[in-house]
Structures are given as structure tokens and as C-alpha cells.
Length: 107
Image 1 (cartoon, rainbow, N blue to C red):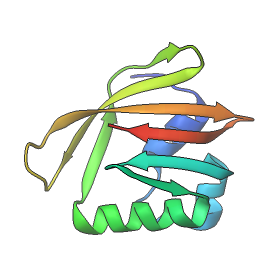
Image 2: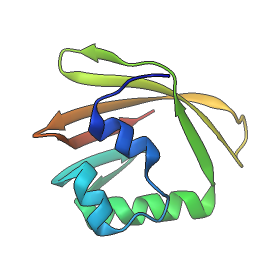
Image 3: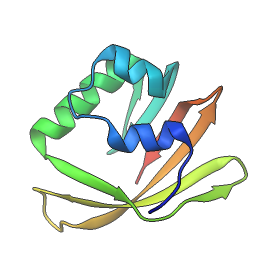
Image 4: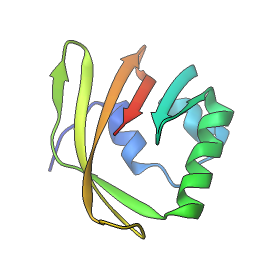
């Protein structure tokens, strides 16, 4: 099993409908997520993004490896769901600050 820092492990274990309080344990208040050419900043916006994404294309993501690239934690994950080309590998790039995710880029 892959060992990851707590914030990343918590992120991959989050329920699709995670509450604001649950997301606050994983993301900083000013966190930014970039996915599908859109930016979502702040925990309420991140929650909306997660709920919308799962409603449109339910999926699961299984981390494959972890690499530190100058402070950015890079995690390729096998993403399986109801979308063309499933499964596919998407790279998740995390920046962690004070034990929580401050930035996440998925691509």
C-alpha cells in the first residue's frame, strides 16, 4: 500500500459530498484547485466543484505513486468512472502548507 502524507491520504479518502467542516481539515481556507481548465478557490468553491464533478461523472481515484518535485507532491492516480476513456491516469499536483492542501492541480 502506498504511504502518503496525511492531507493527501485524507483527500483521496474524502466522500464526494464531504461537508465544509470535513474539507476544512484537508484544505487551507484559501486553497486553490485547478481542474478541467477551471479554478476553484476557497473551501465553499472546492466543495461545489467536488459535488458538481461527482454528479456529472462519478469516479474513483486510486493513487499509484508519490514523488516530491521541489516541494510539489506529484501523485499519478488511476481514475475510473462513467466517462470516455475510463480508466485513465491523471496527475495530481499538491502543494501542502501547515499540514493542509493549499493548492491542487489535476491534469
